[in-house]
Length: 196
Image (tube, rainbow, N blue to C red):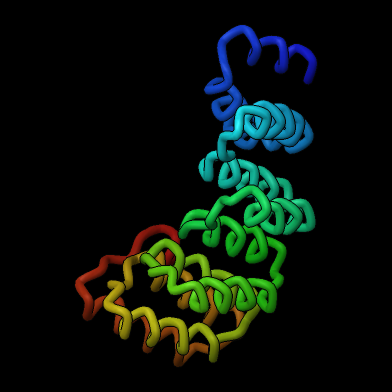
């Protein structure tokens, strides 16, 4: 099947590589995505071109979807060699992958790297971080991240509160659930099916 993908790419041009990688990522077919990536990397480098960041982000997403964070880290380590600077999507994808594996320590290492490189966080990235800490039952860290989110001027949304509420429920913190639920309501946010 990979030979077929290569033939298709050669027929329609290199831009098709990125579309195929994204499609294979969506289908959780990491081996096929990596095969196509290697082909496009070879082709672009032979022309003296840079591998597009969107290609790396698609591959990181494929790794996160299948839980192969070792491969994600290998790709991450390869980015500087190829002159590709990670962006917020790159970091958020790594965080999401480690969060799904409940590797809170690795999530926080990525977060530290993100801060060290002065990458401005958005609500989606903070929500990924909060979800990771909630999954790991680290409610103290959740509270710290929530404060930092607000300090940085990022407005918490319903997903933010649902993550924290889920974490409180996971650890059996009834008072915490009540406190965060009231705080959510005071911000004008209405609970949804995820909240309950």
